[in-house]
Amino acid sequence: MDKAVERRLIDLESRLAHHERMAEELSSVVFEQGRAIDLLTAQVRRLRERLMLLEAGAERSPQDDRPPPHY
Picture: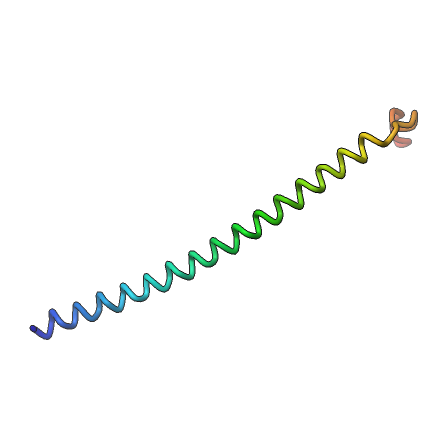
């Protein structure tokens, strides 16, 4: 095999190995971000439910309808 062709083949194999490693690392990062998004979504859902329960159980006072003192 010609030395130039052999060198190009080695270079291509090296680049391929680098790209495969990068793809695996990116896949891992995307997976972890997906887990974090799922966790945050569940937390927001629970907080929204708690807020709705608190709002439903809370009675409004006449003071809630008055403007603040600085008006």
